[in-house]
Length: 374
Image 1 (cartoon, rainbow, N blue to C red):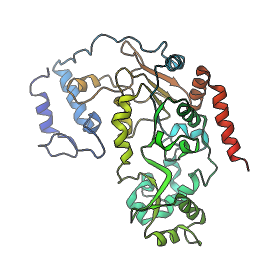
Image 2 (cartoon, rainbow, N blue to C red):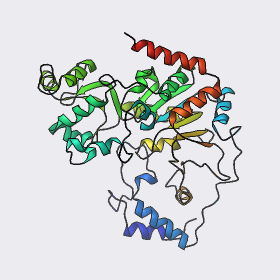
Image 3 (cartoon, one colour):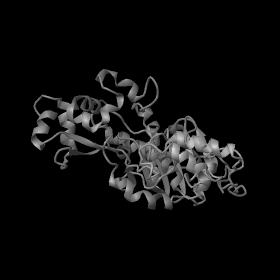
Image 4 (spheres, rainbow, N blue to C red):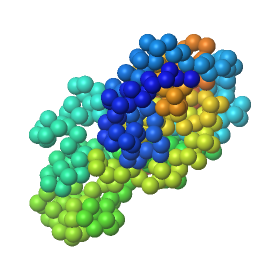
C-alpha cells in the first residue's frame, strides 16, 4: 500500500529526466529493464521523503535468512567451493585487478588515468574515449594506446588474472566479466569463450569507417611507428579507408553483442559471484550484481566497500522501482555477502592458499615466465 496521490503528485511536478511527462519512465540505451538507477535521483529522493512524511513503512521482506556460508569470510568461501557448491563461478572485474601490473585505474585522484591526461590537452578527460573526438583528433588516443597496450608496453598479468585462469583450469569458471580494456585476462590465458569484455579490449581491431576487421598486429605495428612514419597509423588509415581502433567501447558506441547475449543465462546459472577491484560506478555493469539468484553467495574483494544497499532502497523495492540488489555486509539481513577488504592480489592468493591450489598456481606463473624467455 502507498498513500494515495503521493506518486502522482510527485510525478506531476518532477518527471524523470529524459522523458516525456506522459511516458513516466526513461528509455536507457543498453539497459534490459528500468531500475532505480535509470530514474532521476532527485525524483526518487523526494518520493522517499514524502513516503516517510506520510507514515508509509515498507513491508518487511520476511524473517532473516539462514547464513549460507560456513563463515562470512574467505575461509567460508573456500569451504563452499571445496564442498562442490560452486561450479559456475562468475568473476566481475574492474581496474583494481590490473593496478599491480602498473596500469592505473581510471578514477583514483592523483594517480588514476583521468587525472593523468592533462598532457593531451583534452576538452575533458573522458574525451579520449569519445568516438567523435577520436575522429577529429586521433593522436591522443593512439598515444594512450602506445603507453598501455600489453603488446607494446611490458605490462604482465597480475596474480588475480592468473587466479581467474586457474578457476577456468579447474572447470569452475562460468565466465569472467571484465570492465578492463587492457586484455590482461587474455595474456594470463583466460580463453575467449570464458571472457566477456564489457567495454571491449585490445584483442581485436576495426576500421571505424568501413566496419571491417583489421589484423590486430597490423594496428599495433602502426601505432609503434607513429603518425607520419612509414607504416604508421596515417598510412594504415589510407590503406583501410578510415581510422582503425581497438575494439574498445567508446562513449557514443553500443556495448558488445556478447554482453547482451550472455547476460541472462550466465547470471541465472551463477552459484558464486566474485566481485574484484571495481568501484561499481558504471552502468549497466554495476547492475549485474543484482542479476544472480538470492541463493548465490557474493564476495567483494576490494580496498573499500562499494555497491552497498542503501537503507532507503526498501521503499523502492516495495514500489517495484528496484530489485534491492546491493550488498548487505552487516546485520540480520546479511546471509550471503562477504567483504574481503584489501588488494585483489592478496585476496586471490589467500583463496589459492585456502583452496590448496598453490602448486597449480605456481605452475601457471612459471609457464608465463617461461613464455617470456627468449
